[in-house]
Image (cartoon, rainbow, N blue to C red; front, side):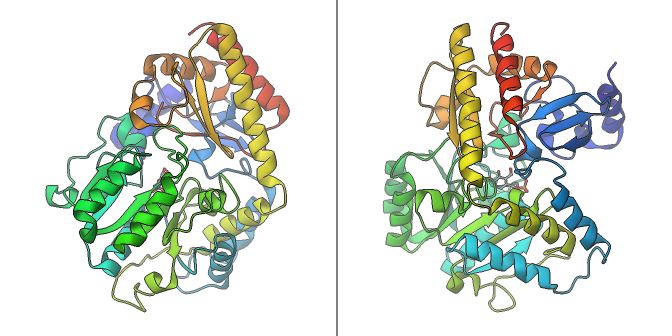
Length: 426
Ligand code: PLP
């Protein structure tokens, strides 16, 4: 029995399903989750010190790789001054100024502790600001686990087969209108019928929770137009894409200005951080300036801000995203050649340092229905065989993968070589 199996059995005695976030349990791929002990650069090491090349990166935050010395130093320095004061600190303003500078659509920003909190709060703000209750989201997108957003959701909810969770009041779920990603006609039709009642559209500008689906040309700009026409708030959920696909987010990459943006993952550098921000007129509706309430004991925590700010500084260097994008492309190109050589129906999507792998003969994969139609059983075999070769991919066919600055050319080559072996077996 592996040490991970022993640790998992013990965990299940005290923690529901043995995990503090469901998709970690490997329920999407079967088997026992790997228990990690430490990580460095592009590698995670399990409790028996086996090394894996990591393409999960803690589900996105570790864009610099693990335990970057400057991030760790910033955390230690901050922790030595005290962990939390529950009062304003100068570093919160530095963080806010940095976010506003990198994402010009954000005039004011509020820090929270997770992506879920960010989207939940942005939604309340959009509803408070517009005086409307209905929201529009897209099937297969995941925006965290608050009630309004856990309707036809992606990510772990989809992996576990509960995209619409019991426990969400039916009356609240009825206010969530779920449409098909990349289907602008459905959006226009819905707004033609109900536009005056719709507070906001919330969208992942690159969908990363149904694997990785880029927006089709014109999709995001049409969302902008529809929101302008009906006075609805356009929320870009950039919890995953923010500082992952480009230094200026998906909004910078595609040249669209949302009204509100939600952030998480990279802005915490591995610490629990989220943020939401946007147009001054909307953000001023928040307490203490306005009537919409939102708060947090640990929001803007100085240690978390130190990790996040150090990360944002390090990714702001010229050429960072050019290199990250090129490296990710090399990985995907190599995987495609290896799959073709083995005669496996395979394709991939990529935006910046974010990618998706699909076992299918259809290309491109741009709709949720296509993702569902991929060969999930082959993905499971691929996942486990790659794990055996020391490559750690997301344990679900509905999650994006991530490359970090720390992945070397040798890591990319080793991953392609492992896949060439694995493709012959699956
Ligand atoms: N929004 C998006 C796009 C996400 O990918 C996630 C998490 O994966 C969330 C929101 C929720 O963030 P958190 O898990 O930090 O609550």
